[in-house]
Image (cartoon, rainbow over all chains, first blue to last red; front, side, top):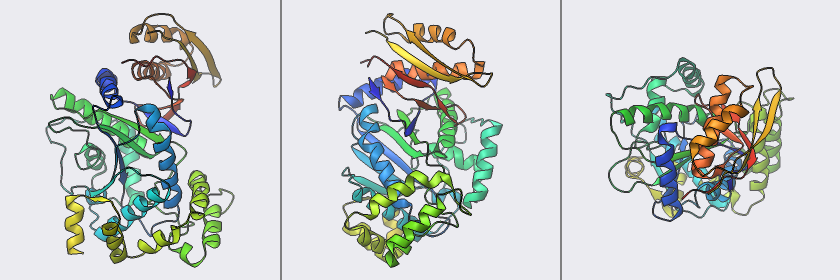
Length: 313
Length: 89
């Protein structure tokens, strides 16, 4: 028996995919398929929050425990920025946020290869797929888009989560990896949308990549969407203890602006701040130029679109 | 080759909770599990019964036991508490 920790909720495929997913999982466990973890990063709505450190620690925990339990240890971790899909053209912000999360994952002990890429801005999910999202989901996406500064049509953005440059549900030719989505609680809504896309793709005879999701259920707010009460990552350069105290208050609902949904990441951030080299990482992502240098010097794999963006920065 | 003991923790329509153990010595086949879980879930709403079945189906097929599952609208729901699930394949 392979048990998942209570920290995660299992996002399972629709019933029509159960057999194929189970077969693919068996192949992956035998080493016949690559195990690829995909993690999306939305557009930054302000500065990079200090909480990114704790978020990385939570992902590292899942990589150490739940992914080996579900399939086997990941062969690679792919981080992608979905910002271009939202109409956000702030390439510097995308680079800094990806560099911060990737660097924090390394600090938290993740040793798998880490790939960084930005999503395609244009539509990738074919128009001929008839995707009918339930009204309740559409309402949720519409409200979420207002908070995230998303300028794209909310339904379109949700459907594009299945795109090859995002969670890659639509498989190309050859032996596609077994894909594992890891995300905070809001990602579960997008998983539901992706199930609708996958269903529509199956009806059209398109090939699907086998996939499951692991949703870190106590992380209620995306880390790249900083609350007004949260400290920025760069605040820790002046005083780590002061920045940590601010984050503790921001995660305490008894304080004004406090949000209990930040609690687990806040606790994990405290652990991360005790690690050597944390100041070096904070310094390295403090500006676009420094982040570009850091990404080049680190052993991250850089995708073609991100490489192009970095050339013209 | 054998299913097993699966304990289901599900909210009841009256606001309480149901926590019962399901045992089966039937061979590894999703259908008997689903069929039996209908009985387990008889007191809960149709909506939650479907969710419990989805959890059982997936656990049996994949050999992954998760206490929480993502529902078909993206909500996170308690499903399985503990159990012995065969690792098929």
